[in-house]
Image (cartoon, rainbow, N blue to C red; front, side, top):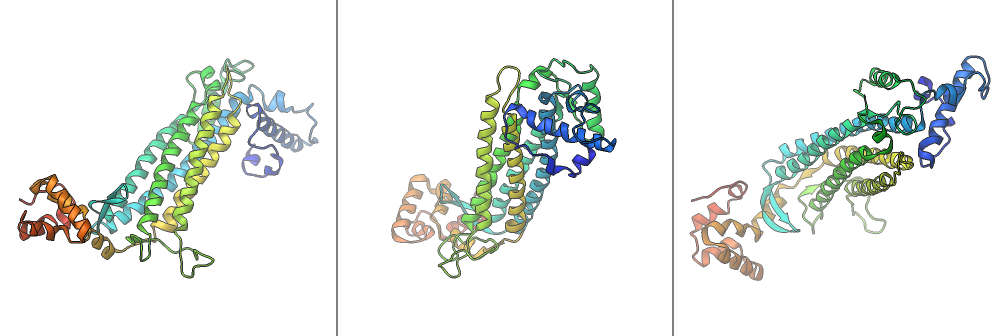
Length: 389
């Protein structure tokens, strides 16, 4: 078994991950490979099962219905640990940018329209908070992978299994992996129910939704270089067009979005496969395993890619950020506490029609003095709860 784990016999695992039979093909493939390794080590030939038998000996006291879901859980726990490391990497890179950009004032936007000022640091700090929250959710979901039904055998009753096996096997797994694996509270429920995988996939989907949002916001802030927002500069990775010279596309942000969509789609697959469990067993666990491993692998790569090839090397354009604030009609919101919503709305309407600055219109109408307007529209005064008089 150790040699199999080391990858020495990977070419002998010939069955497809997606299969009928609740994983029996994979389980028996493993049993046969391990059995034949043991036979050869004893001087026998492959297939001389009168000495060691894949069912009678290697699979002794076990069933596909406990070994297969338990192996999925052990593997998922390990791969989620790798994913969490990648997520922490991205969070750290976002935290660094939040600190670097804390004094860069930019325009906030709601529904792609000018809102009120914020800082580029606030933007990246929010991104880091998304990832931190998802790290917590995935860590909590990972805990459900530690409850195993080893010893349940066919349907959870433990037929053909030694009564002590369920206790011995989780202790052995804990010794080997260092992970606190435990026996499931209800073996019959654990053998037929796959909600733990749905739980994990749901956490992955949430992370994918947020990661896609981050990637797209970066893409929009990078838009330009002269006719877009131009608030940040994403690293240039490759020529962007076969016909337009000099065009560079935000390919890292785009590929991360595509990866996230696949994770979201896999969640639907996992949900449907889980729903199809009937009576004492879910025959569709191979589909769950395939989609779940794929999601974890994709999301880990997406997190690393965005961290290393986009966030780490991106730069800011402070002048462009400030220019959008000073030229925005959205800052008229700051007048509300002093002159009321209706007058502020009227100023905004005139500013849009004439191109005049909102401060100039307010002064012309005599609503406020120049000193008051300058204080109210000072960008730093619009970043936090404040009143200037």
